[in-house]
Image 1 (cartoon, rainbow, N blue to C red):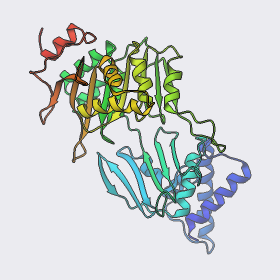
Image 2: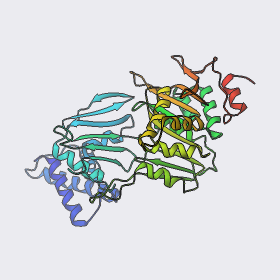
Image 3: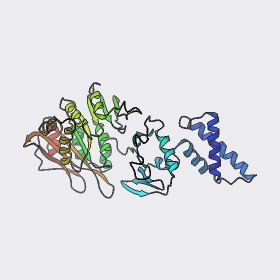
Image 4: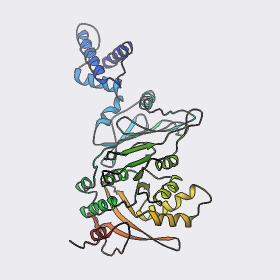
Length: 406
């Protein structure tokens, strides 16, 4: 056993004897580790114990192992790392600036299980043969997803998506060149007027970041209720209620699905409803809420703004065999106003590539739409050929779109 492992064992035993919880009392844990490292360093000088080396890095490694997530802690603390995942313990990948790379970190099967157990300790969520998937939110806001065999072929598949707040407003998205000044002003006015927006895009395209930025344009006196699978949104307002789903317990009861949360949210006097991600039948409940005059925002996986509109017309059919496409198309036309599509290119750059206006007219089960903004390769620019009028946008928003009145 090497020196680092010996000191770590001594520290863990001391923590056990003193009844210290490293997660709740990191300060005392750090002091204990520093004292243990100093003591071991003195003893190793006058005995046959293996030398420890520089006490500074040794203290940090032991602290990460005891109070953090071991070898993963430096990656979790690295602000340039957006996501961490592995399909086998000896190959840990990260994503930086939208591009993946293999790290030098290697784990073992035992370490993986220990790390996941520690991550799930404070979440109340479980992982076993009867429930081989788990989604959980870590204390720092990162999202954990784990799949175990026999769903996976051999090893545990673990994904940790960190929530890095690079932009919390439309102005900051302009600074990051994810949005043009004209588009940011247009979207700010739209959200302020209670326009219903659907944010679409692929995985990692920046949908959640865009949604957070849009919430900065919501009035400060509005009460916002958000519903999510796992807490990810960080809405910069005072009166916010966040709700997340719950998995079933060991008896298979107690599950709280997203559809239930949408219904409960309407009983909480919201001025604005936000759905973190629309995936299935909850789309029907969301559309019904928006169609009753409730302003809202939501995200959706899609390849384009037009595909997102088609998908939001189709998903409600999953709610009941009695729901018809004619009903869903008319409902979408009545309540969805804008589709904002986010893109991540091969270089890892994230930006809004198009903004689609959704009209209220329907012909042959097709909703009238108009491409309001399109990306010209450099930035998002207004479409001069857009012919679009919508009562909820208001005349000043139309002026922003057309460039009239200065």
